Length: 364
Ligand code: AMP
Ligand code: TRP
Image 1 (cartoon, rainbow, N blue to C red):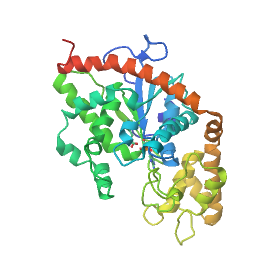
Image 2 (tube, rainbow, N blue to C red):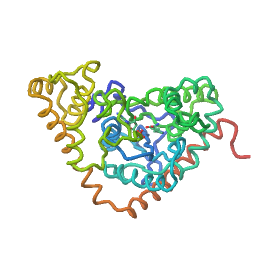
Image 3 (cartoon, rainbow, N blue to C red):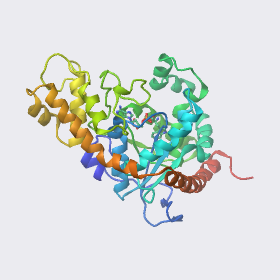
Image 4 (tube, rainbow, N blue to C red):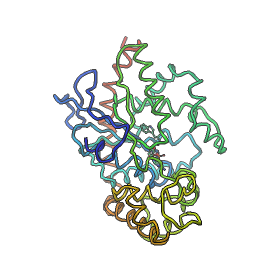
């Protein structure tokens, strides 16, 4: 259990629970294997440059779970989700490929992980429709991410409203039991669990109930310039975040200009010192040292010295990602995605047939 121990998530499942319906499927060999592995599923939207928050909150766990061979891992570029907010089709097309490239550069290895583009596997949309018929609109009305987006002026549309149903379909399509995500996805995960249970009650046991895997440190990395809001790739101000594409110099500049406060003591206090607390979390997550230990070392040395150390910790952590990014070419990424889509479709079709049979849509 590499992840549970290393990252110390309170929500980590300590032991893999076997899928109830039988042996796991190996996408690599296209055969049913003897070994029963728990399926991991997660997704990322191609809606902007990948950033440090997602890296610390979720993607590091993606890699750790792949590297732990007790899991069968499935990762998806969730492009259908990214269409729920206004976008430019040309830029979107570019971002889909770029997001896949960054996922590969993080260390996702297509011979050990199934990686594909959501829109190329139509079973996602089909399952979302079926789950939508089990979703009371009252539940969707309570989704905070939807309300936040509407409050920010994003135009309401049916896709944005039913976004969590598609997310539940993503997870349940592959019968995933474990979902590595950042803290902001908790409510969506609750709804996925609820929909799995509803489906099973109504139609018989088909889906495992998925567990979120959220790290203890840096589960919600905050913006550098506005440390009371989340670091996000959709933030129009690029100074608010560290992009995984940023060069070491850009990273140093951004950390140097991060908003702090006027009391020059380095200590963890989310309310009084949100900027410094955020930097402490980032440094703890990137160095593996505890927040207390870091606060003790940097407490009185001044913010300048502390920020330099934070920047160097980030630069060192992202160096391997940066060098892999430079090696990958677009044709190779496209080839990996094509193979991934074929494997994902075959696997999803097999599992989706169980759903069709259960709900009365079996072959006539
Ligand atoms: P997104 O980039 O919004 O598609 O998110 C991809 C993954 O990164 C999701 O699991 C998010 O929960 C996680 N994530 C995004 N931003 C942050 C953040 N600021 N802190 C922690 N996790 C994050
Ligand atoms: N909603 C997630 C986000 O914004 C992305 C996502 C879509 C996802 N489907 C998923 C994450 C399934 C985990 C599992 O980050």
